[in-house]
Amino acid sequence: MSELLKTLKSEWTLAQSGAMSRVPLYHQLYSVLKAAILDGTIPYDEQMPTEQQLAATFGVSRITAKRAMDELAAEQLIARFRGKGSHVIYQYKPQPVRAPLVGMLENLIEMGKHSIVRVISVDKVRPPEDIRALLDLDDDETVYRVIRVRSNEEGEPYAHYVSYTAGIKRGFTKRKLESTPRLDVLRDNGIDLTRVEQVLSAENASIQIAGELNVEPGAALLSIRRKSSNADGKVVDVLDGLYAPNRYQYSMVLSVD
Image 1 (cartoon, one colour):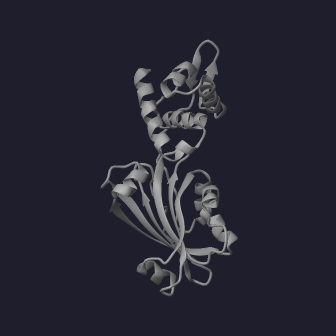
Image 2 (cartoon, rainbow, N blue to C red):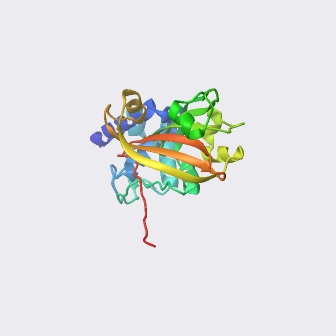
Image 3 (cartoon, rainbow, N blue to C red):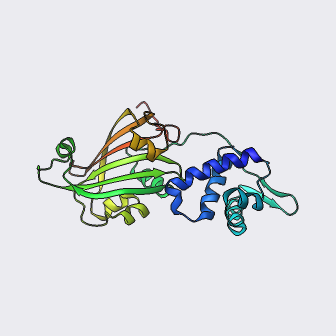
């Protein structure tokens, strides 16, 4: 149990240094425990740490520890037995994280609803030359640039985005973009995307990106440039995404006509 608590404490420390630091303590603890159960760190039928052990290890109150355990029980990840403690009832099956992209905007919205978005900045800027060309802008025109980090529900960051969007009239605020899928905000502005083009490549993590994604500087990242067009065929949104491959996989299904 001591080694398990050390592992959990390490994950807790990482969570507190990232986006999860802004959520209540009980949810931070619940997220760390849930992640350990889902990835098999705490296997099926193993006894969970007691509320007293959790409180002592993580420096939280007994009430906080109990609430985190209650959340796990409510999701049927653990079962609590009087006099016998709590045991894991979830059976881990390894499976990759998959997120379909091309031509599946509704799935992108659904993915957005089940992840945590941290907006680093929202600015109206004169974009770089290549972005201006793609968006067909005059030299003095400005667009919204949004820099974001997306994490899974356990608070593990897996994607860093820089997007440039034309035609925005309202709703591009940090608060809105952290609570609402970005594609929904585009639709609220009358921007309906009908075509998405993507180029996949690879890129080494800079020191800044490595810090945001909790990877080593120089680590290989999946790189995606996504150009999205409206019904008139005009490119209105350009997004550059960098993904940590240990937490994100790109999946495609191809068929022969």
